[in-house]
Image 1 (cartoon, rainbow, N blue to C red):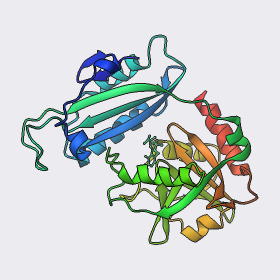
Image 2 (image 1 turned 90 degrees about the horizontal axis):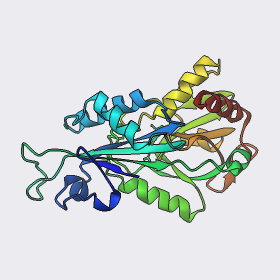
Image 3 (image 1 turned 180 degrees about the vertical axis):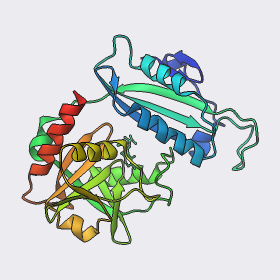
Length: 278
Ligand code: PDD
């Protein structure tokens, strides 16, 4: 249960970050969450590619090489590896001498990573699905950056929980963007669709994997803008994320989605996904 902080593996109790860290003061940093099943990371390279892209967008240098990242992550999941875990990693701009939005040259990034068990998915999810609410997307316009500034996501999850829902699906100008912490798929008029990649949403690794698996198994899909009205009238809605895989949404704003049960296309995708994971 050691965590990684700036080159050392230390017990959580003795891991300390100075209050002048820019992650703490400004949310000035980026992160990744990478799942591992039975000691095998799912999508390790795509996650490290996206980390690279987030760092570049934030004008941060990658503090570790690919090999160093792989070694850190591998060590965090233990030897022998505990079965299902996710590794959280974050890089902040580091500890500056004073609080100033403009960061001086020469500040070293703070690098943190730790593993956490992935809770096994409750059987009820496959049987009943989950509930979601919808809200306007109040976030900034650089959703493709996996930024640690997550105020909107925190509020959205709170609002969802207040309505006994798991997730908030967001929309901007009448178009679905994504969930607070997940991507969205919709089945409507016999077509599987998901909003295309853009700066308005995070390019989910699970989203990409689901599309690759769909292609391999002959499931047609389109990456196209999804209207909020289409979402409301959908036969199926799915959420995807690294820690939650592909989930069926059976209630939206209190109304049933389709017939209110996980749909046949989700059953198919879930079987394919579980098979791939194993
Ligand atoms: N969140 N969109 C947002 C805004 C997210 O925060 C996430 C993941 C996703 C799904 O991406 P992926 O399939 O790569 O996990 C989409 C992580 C799990 C989190 O914040 O904990």
